[in-house]
Length: 117
Image (tube, rainbow, N blue to C red; front, side, top):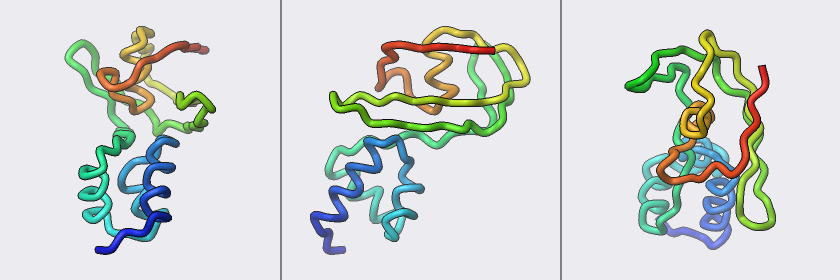
């Protein structure tokens, strides 16, 4: 596949806004496999897909899909506002909150978090 500069910048933009590979492929009208290969070659990281079930070694809980808004800040950071309904009270440590929002805590740093019931 011949890639245009517009497609590559679109991939980078959507990835930085927190979209998954599948969402990005759909928005750009390209195949998931082509996008995955190009992103891997360019070193572009994508948001992991959100799961309806959250499961860790410490806890077991099910949640509703997250209503999430992602904003890209001028300094390159992201601000995420996530609204979710959980069936059980979650552990409120940064790692758990990031996982609930679909972020890999080993790749992202949570600078500030606010949890409201």
